Length: 601
Image 1 (tube, rainbow, N blue to C red):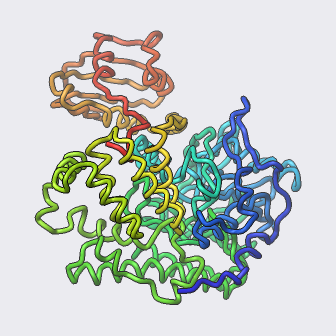
Image 2: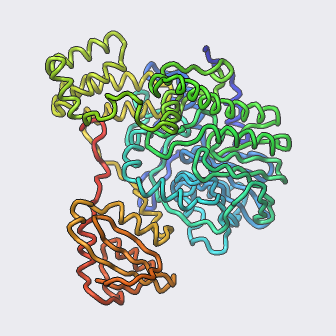
């Protein structure tokens, strides 16, 4: 399908309402550390280089646009100050902030730019559209003194899902996110070229202030600072906890991250719960029925708005059809006996979707989304008996290399396939060479070159970043990238969630040799938490009624618990029993390496 590069509608919409931006677009911490900088993307002002897919180049040109934009009377957006958008709705006394970005420094800079043009209006409300970190992590930048009496609205289940996706598996997700977003890569024609969903992610101060008002049902109406809002619950779509909402006074519809100007992920490369495209499509259809006829503009948590009833309906209809087509066709072929990999190779979008710019796979891809649908319904196993008990990757690699005839033969064969243009199979062969002999410089360079060429040709920004980061690390080794592993969220977690973060770090084989019971009496919460180490498992019991032999009892506040978890001991905390039990507990915890190997074993 030939794409219409003469169609400039997206560029016109992305520029519409522009007021001003920062020059240069560089945001720093108080100590001067750069957390967001788009100065390296000047190459996007020129012609498309040979090292970037033309369609992705076009999307990057749209994503790099930044500044303060007017969406409609009383609604403004900060775009291009992070991977996500921050929307500002003017109320009777101040402003309502929707999705305050990833980092406090970025949201603060965006709010400062808004105030320079619209006055020093206080923040009188905050709305989190959903439970992903790029939509709440910068909240302390707009509420630097804490919540106070400012209402914070979020969909029901927000806190549980925010913790589940950003903390429990946070180390592995964050490491894989460095690949997915090209964190640490230089923006250049041979390097990072947007994420498809936004230009790049920020690396600033990440935090969370818990919501005060839960949105629990579709049709729920709330008034914040005099602004009426009608909500639509959309759980299980782009996030497990998500919602759209409508501003009747402004005839404006917020579609959160349920409809963006690309095909989204059903399973992100960084890892997440598999999303449900069937219910996603259903909720977009419900949005069309509920709100579109009364909407003059639809805006989202990423990209640029869409104006006009007919245009909004067309945009949302394409998004609706896109997710349902992938779902239904995957299920059709799945029930014919095809595996996820086979379906991903066979499926083609119909012309009406394939030609739509808003359906292109810049962030999600048809290929990995189809495999995610297969996984959602049938799991990891493709049904072939040989897949049931495979060797781990490094053991497989050694055997493949031996079978093919040695490392030199594998490298030569890999290069041969690469020279023929079959980069996909070349990567498979050369991966075995690297995993069989991780220190073989010739194998690593051959694989790095293959990954680089795959990245240069990819329309999908996250695939490009993944390939190019793999090439980079094969050539230079793992370079430590500063990461916020959820520490900024700690104060917002419940005590149950805090103890869960301890439990998932317990080294089971070591812990199986020990047992003890610790009771934590929280004086500020009027709650008792009993931790029991049993059979290598740390069991937490809230307000226990059964009797037990307690090895250590502590009377403390949640704030004191946070200090204990930081390793600051129990000085000043009232306790009875044996304090050494606490050291035994912490001695059983593993500290994961946040820079573990990905492209090598």
